[in-house]
Length: 545
Image 1 (cartoon, rainbow, N blue to C red):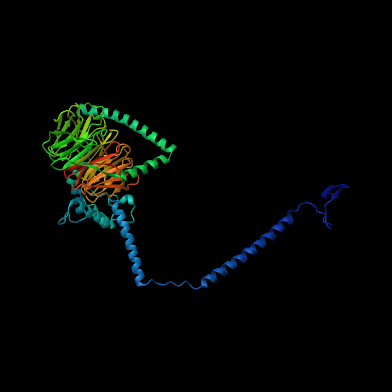
Image 2: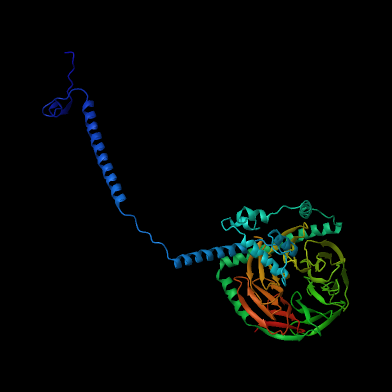
């Protein structure tokens, strides 16, 4: 036969058998039957999809036929309340943005800015601080609340193109030239002695920084090994400071006592007064052991050599004082006459400070400059300008690499002694700054101002870490705890002395007793004694009960 008959067989016990369904024997391929089965399945699926689509259409028609929800309009009173709430939100947002504005501190710059906004530059009875606050309000009123906060630092983002054009008027050619001159960077050639001093201070500051970091690392390891030690120490410190009392009250002079300072080791205390006299007192007996005369005007500042009463010889320079006649006097512990003078300032001296090494002295003056002196040669190394108004406060970094200055222009400038550059300008106070001090670890700087506040500046972040509304009057002096910087002392013209925790900036103790403005204050090296000087002609010694 030409056709081959194929019978599917399986092997059974009895042999091979054909595979049949009882009626038919299957020949060839099953492809045709498989196609028919798949076509049937496809038709069934299409029918089910059609039914589902009809149901969805019916559901949509039913929902469209349902009535829409009723909307009710708010009453007039409710609309007024809602509008008032929105206005309050806008006001709060505007005040928040206004606090972030960078308002000029120089009074002439404030007047120019007010003129740009077509506002009167001066009102009857208005002072410089009030004028600055008025400028802040004007700038805040023109803010665009939808603009990012970063763009509002200078208040250049205004509402509408007209106001934007108003805030940036066209400058004349002369104003452009002046602006270019102000931004011009220039260098002044200094003497060879200044270059040598900068190199020496660079090396000395690096060695001090290494020692300081090693000490901090050791303290950190101790705290990690026993975390409860730090808590116990802070608790004991707070309890001890709360018990500080007045130990002795001393009649310092016939005129107000303007300055007081403990010697290294706190075995002596020096006071300066408006009668141009410097006196040395024994601690803790508070007996006067020497009277130093040499100034012809009020004594405005005192500073001890870092090694005075320790490794420094009594015949060498152990202390320096600043006078309002514009001259600084260098003193030894032997004799009552100065061993040297620092002459050069054209205005009265404000404050004076020793470099941590003891080789250099910094002075500030009302001639708008601060100067660096060689203590051994009594010669001027540096005359530094940069402030626009009289300078008042000066303090050196514990490492000796930086110096901070501040004055009546409400600015704090941080200078790098190794390069001579102004590396930071700290703005925030609205009135004159009269006090500065670095913390023991060198990371924080405290400033006291006539705006009744203390600002703690973080030098690493280059901004204020916290603002303490400390007193009800001018703050005359601030001082960190010398060893660890765990608390801060502030004196004020409200006749009060306050101690603040640097951990959470809470008030630990208020020391009252002076009957006049407190001019200055100091803390002993061990933190056990406090000295304050006031306009009531007395200086007081405070201690733990």
